Image (cartoon, rainbow, N blue to C red):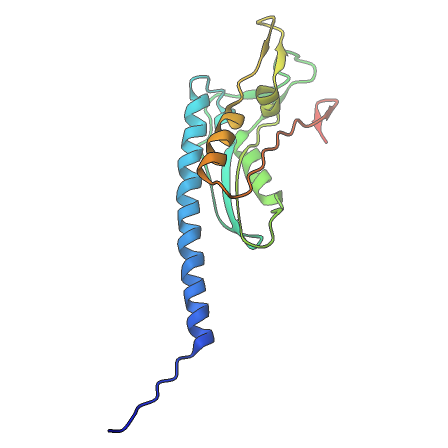
Length: 178
C-alpha cells in the first residue's frame, strides 16, 4: 500500500485561526460595548439633559486601531444645552453629539497590543456630575456617579482584564475650552 504524505501549511493555518479568534472576540466586545452603553444611558435618562445623552459614545480597538464605535442615540438632542447655563455672560452652547465625535476622532488608545474598549461621556460638564459639584439652585452637593457604577459592574464582568476608570473635568478660561 502506498502512503500519501499530506503537508499542511502550518503558518497559514495559524494565521487563519488567529484571524478567526480576533474577529470573534472583537464581535463579542462590540456587542458588550453596545449593551453597556444602553445601561449607562438608562441610568441618566431620567434626567435627560439632551446633549448629555447625545455625548455618550463607545469604541472598540484592537492593536491600537479602531474596529467600531457608536453612540447612545442616533439623533441629536432637540433642546439646547449650555455650559455655564446660569451665567449669561459666559454661557456657551454645547452640542453633545459633536463633542462625542470629536472625542472619538482625537482619542489615542492606551493599549497598542490587544483589545481596548472605551465608554465616554464627552459633554464638558459631565465630570461635575460624576465627581460632584455644588448646585447653586438646589443649594446642595450633587453627585450621580453613573460611570463609577458601570465601572464596578464592568470590572466584575471582565475580570481578570485590566479595567481603568478616568473622570476628566476640563478647565475653562473665559468660557473657552482649553
